[in-house]
Image (cartoon, rainbow, N blue to C red; front, side, top):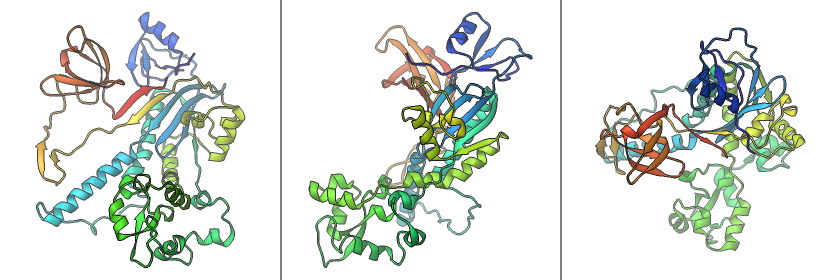
Length: 432
């Protein structure tokens, strides 16, 4: 039987108490001793003050990842995990939005249909600047530290502070002078690629023709500029491949295997962890709590020693020296938290050519709801008869859409909706 997360408990003064089991929370809600304070993470508030209540200290543990960050709450005395969640970041979505905006503005300048002077020399990046797609991870982790600190009595924080050695990941046996000089010591990029690929096109073996540098995984699909993602192609093959994946373009399995054998795995995730680790540590220290750090190897050792399965929240529980004595129930259901943003500030929508085609109203609240709220809708009869729980998409007409875990239900009247969780920039689900 799968276990559930503990329920956060607040007294009348909103002072955090020791989290209780779900059965205990149901009893207090049915008997009128408490009320629901927050749906995600589930929190109840008591109807009386308990000034002499003994509150258990909890340790908040993080396993920062490029796409998903695991977080757990562990009792300091017993080492038992009482709450687990996995936080999914939206860095790639932010990067795609910025790339799209850049392309639209550049196209307008080239066509001179709506000129906006490029601002390249009037901006100064502050010290420690990170791209928005990476800074989003730092801000999201900081947000959840402050949120959980309001609902639980935290005594310490643990986080994985691993520094990925990208050269060692790309070549585990690298050492000595080669390691100190780097992968391109004494070479220019083009000369390195000419030597690596035998001065031939990787797709048709054409030689003695002008060769162009091609990305094996296109930049538009998340590919990097690392040497491991670059190859040589003649002009005809480069145009034919366009931004398709090499698996889609190369039909010969022997040639495809040879190209993939020379190409190495991209290290974008490792670079993201390296770039943000100091910023994450700085945000955690602003909480005023002692911060314990651990390495990735230590986390893996603790998880293997305890015989636990691989999962983001399990790795978070095994972080640091405290992870060796932690008690983890692998059947615990972790809360899935996905960052989805607060909507777009763009008031004018454009087509693919950059011309305005629609305009949005400034009004966001319709009949007491706004897009992104979690609602429960009970439809007693009609085409959409049933009970629906999910995120709502509001319209001024009062006909709403509800996005559930099974799909999107259109045409639900606002009179049938009841808000259960107001929009806060995240989407929640339970791992079953």
